[in-house]
Amino acid sequence: MFLINCPFCGERDQSEFSSGGEAHIVRPKQPTELSDDEWAEYLFMRKNIKGIQFERWNHVHGCRKWFNVVRDTSNDKILSVYKMGEKPPVNYK
Amino acid sequence: MKNKYSVFSLIKNALSQHENWQQAWGNPEPKKEYEAIIVGGGGHGLATAYYLAKKHNLKNIAVLEKGWIGGGNTGRNTTIIRSNYLWDASAGLYDHALKLWENLSQELNYNVMFSQRGVMNLAHNLQDVRDLKRRTHANRLNGIDAVWLNTEEVKKFCPIINTSPNIRYPVLGGTLQRRAGTARHDAVAWGYARGASEMGVDIIQNCEVKGIKRNGDKVEGLETTKGFIKTNKIGVVAAGHSSVIANMAGLKLPLESKPLQALVSEPVKPIIDTVVMSNAVHAYVSQSDKGELVIGAGTDSYVSYTQRGSHNIVEETLKAILELYPIFSRMKMLRQWGGIVDICPDASPIISKTNIKGLYFNCGWGTGGFKATPGSGDLFAHTIANDEPHKLNAAFNLNRFVSGDLVDEHGAAAVAH
Image 1 (cartoon, chains in turn yellow, red):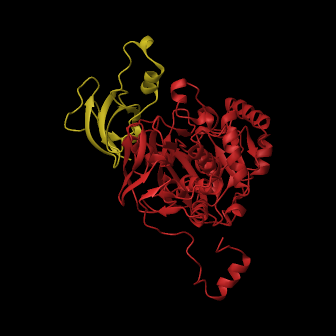
Image 2 (cartoon, helix red, strand yellow):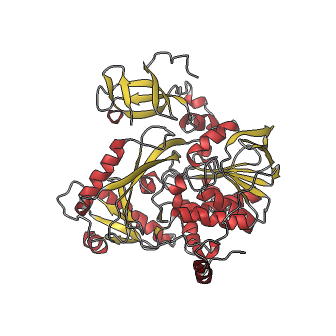
Image 3 (tube, one colour):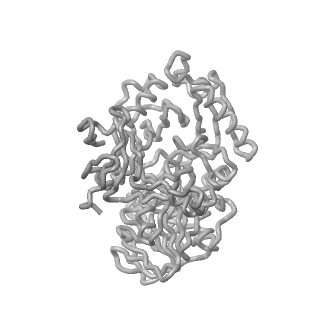
């Protein structure tokens, strides 16, 4: 249980949000060219990091907008929040 | 067994104030090299080591556990055992496990307190009724006992359920698997540990894996907090931390690790003598031998390794419990905890070779691995020993995410295990 600082609404309880999983998985530009392995990688394989993870959240019971979060999954601390389309902060690896 | 448990050993030890019981398993330092190493000393890992030694005659093996055995999800689940899965592959896997459960206490000479008290799954809407009836038929075609109960029969089987048609999620019926039930989760880990240790398996606790040494496409050993250990076969059974171990070998798995919560109440007199599950409202309940209500909640939606989980999940579960069982309204909850479960996109496990020679994974059990413990260990041991899957776990290979041949149990079973 934690608070998320929605870039549009401010700090709200996590239960107002819905997790969209790992961020920055790029949709294939040429889906017809993809091999089965590449499809598996895109659809199913996840980094599932213990530590600093870049992820997407949706403020589903609020403004309903999507945004990105940098969170440490080993202690649920949120390190940074940034809007869709913005470059991820570079000081986290 | 040098120290067989029986009524006579109990009496004998009672006469000496129970001060002379032998240690149930050893506490060795790791050797330089093993034929095979199992990473993860939970129920599945210990069972794997047990069957490797017992059925495949591998004696020089070790189980590495970063904490203490059975301290992860083995000690955190709600102990439900059943095999009424929809698809043939799952039915084969889970019923294999259930058959092993039925004789496990005798097999291990350790009372795992397996109790076939039945598991009932409730239907709350027309689609639930259709799905559960379909599952009942599928189960019976696979030789798994299953019956459909209408609302009156549900009430008769478990009288404390509120079957009023005026509640938010009325009970329209349910399925019952009578061979299903519960077992004592710690005893399963301890029993397998004792059995494996007896056959010469080294159970090494407080030993965390820090790296996997690879030579090209095969494994050569493990870097651990107790130094480097050489081996050609590594079986990873690390549950929520499977992706972390996979990452050490440069592998990516189709898993997400999420907190799953459970809670127990204060102990009360016997009130519910079965296990009742409800997928739609996401609540399941049974009563432990101590008298506590054991309540399983849902997973959080986000990846986390914190073993906590969010309060709103527990709140939702208790709301559903209270509506179905108004009699529990004044019960006090004593403890709440979380475990980290590794969930596959199709909610089925992976018991598989990888494209790295000598590296095997048994993971992805998600919210329902406890029930499979003996079967999972048996089949994983077969896979490691023969470098080939058994026919019962052939469908649960890692390659199914490439071929698309998924075992999609989400709709049928996976919401709550």
